[in-house]
Image (cartoon, rainbow over all chains, first blue to last red; front, top):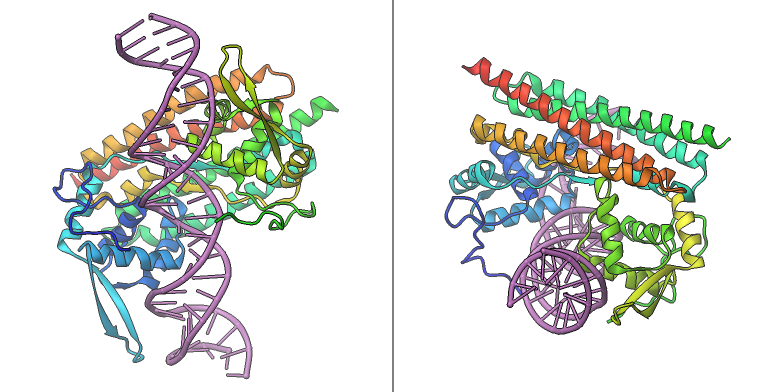
Length: 202
Length: 202
DNA sequence: CGTTGCATGTAAGGTGTTACATGATTAC
DNA sequence: GTAATCATGTAACACCTTACATGCAACG
């Protein structure tokens, strides 16, 4: 059964008749606000370039679902185009109503608290159930992962840094770089704490 | 229709016949591994004391669902008790199989990558759609929130610090304290970046 | 001629939330 | 008396993932 979209839910923004959407939908619309015509596939790549470092790396299937919804509520339009290779694809563009709604969201909708789900910290919290060696390995692996993410985020930051009009993207990238540097640092300090605890028990 | 639990899914751990559960279920079981008999309501409070700072703050209804599942798969048992006030309540205890499975999970199951969903960074990324004032307000609010979380996490850390046998809980709390200090710091640096950008445009 | 990339979707299911519903006890 | 806390659940639904399915183009 399909939900009626003729009378959409209004949300706390100022824009009358604004549709209530999850932040991920606004993120997709945000990507469309940077670049003109994009296919679902290209949007997926965009999330992989930068967005994944501070917000989200969605499943391919969800991109297509979000695009369909955005078109259904009138925030994006799509058309079938034939590429240079003769293959058909569907490209999406943000609509005027979409730009208005996205601006309203950025300007007025309350910011959701950050989601923290830290598997490594959870394992440490349950440290009494694991061997000290396993704990050390887990935290070391997390430190190395954070280091890799740091490098990748820095690479992304440099990539967006020189594009005119993308200054805010670079600021977000800068936040991500610092975030992963901090993650690596926190893992290092956790390792030191674990070592101290182990030494005290020896 | 009820799913058959007679032949549970096995997971990548070493324990044969281990049931595949989300990390949140293991977190609930972990709480039961610290304290003897707890009601769903009390477990909810436990998550609010410390777990929420680095992992999770679930809805009440989900606690009850998880407890039912844990009992169904044999990792916890429950009984009805009558409190001092004459009111009935259901208390849960971790079972032997539950302790084994939880230990196996802590020891062998691969750690999930940390979830990062940072609404504030997302707003900055879409900075071209908002006024500089709004952006500053958003980041300042985040900085203040992080400061409050820092204080609360530090309070929790001190609370668990003196309990014998809770050394690992304190290490996790310490991670959380540093994490929120870093969040506050990152917000401060983001504000400086925003100021620089605004000044360059003036 | 096999792998990678481009390209689009459906179906099913798991995770988790909000809203709803109920009711007793305790503290002010 | 009324607000907060204790206490337990159901129903509906929103979000998001995995698995599945398909097929062409380009590169080596």
